[in-house]
Length: 394
Image 1 (tube, helix red, strand yellow):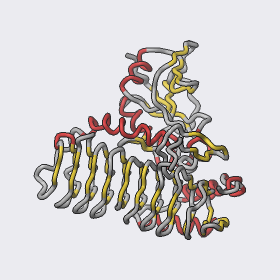
Image 2: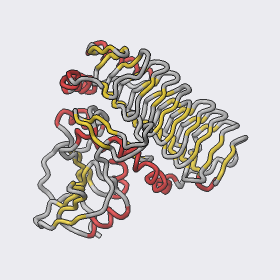
Image 3: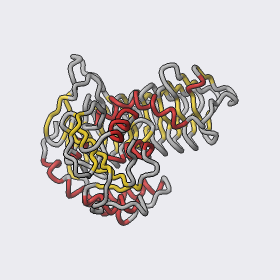
Image 4: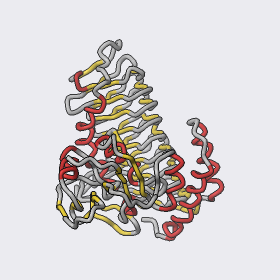
């Protein structure tokens, strides 16, 4: 087994297929399963010195968020490079550390050693190409991730908590689980992380991950294949979806097979369609082109800092960009450009200074200060997405 002294996680040139989720973060900070893609890789290489490579405009924020970690530094010494979109698991780890050269899957380079060899190895591995891949891999990864939470105990001693398959229920000692909660791990683990609160009469079915300091509201129904990242407030009905963190869906309404970025808010009775009436594959607009997802179940993809009003109804496969504001009657368009103010059916550009002001207020409410670096990235994203706002919504 060959363990690298240096490990570099890099973004490749297909990052745009993950818009709008990666406008304001590198690909390796996407969450799939209970971990981010970066955390998943690092788990396998804890002794290696970490380097990160990302798009140039993200470098200041990545450097700020990862003090002491080299970002976009040229690498001359021997190093193992792993694609940020790779889903690291036992099988891929064994292949990479047993070989040399470049490891590819379906034409995509997943890893390579920067040694002189020109050997190419085709591997069978998982990776995240499009937003819906996060949902598709989520269930399996949650089952695999249970091993990382083995120190957490089943909440057997907590009064009035009903459990099924309790050996697969892992709750931090600092998590609060109120009487009347049902935790069902028949189909996979239920993981409740540090500082999370699950209010009374909620039902959580595995596989599922509830992140640090997240609140599950009373009476919520959280179905399998769901990941709720840190510091969220979630109520109503959620199925097979991922909330990256710091987002709210506090009230009734259904969110299914969706990926919601950070700092989003879904108004009361927001509903997402995740299945077409004719049961055909869902097609999604990514980068100005329509892509066949190959899946029957695809809901909403929502970028950072976007919000929708009460009773909003999203069509199957809708994409909402960064800092979009959506309200009004009827269905919004299936593609909503970043920094759009959408009063269905009308749309206008969201004024940048106002968007920054609202974002700062939202972050402050969660005791997170908007740094100068973050604000500069926010403003850069406005310029970067200008062409989006000239695309006809539909």
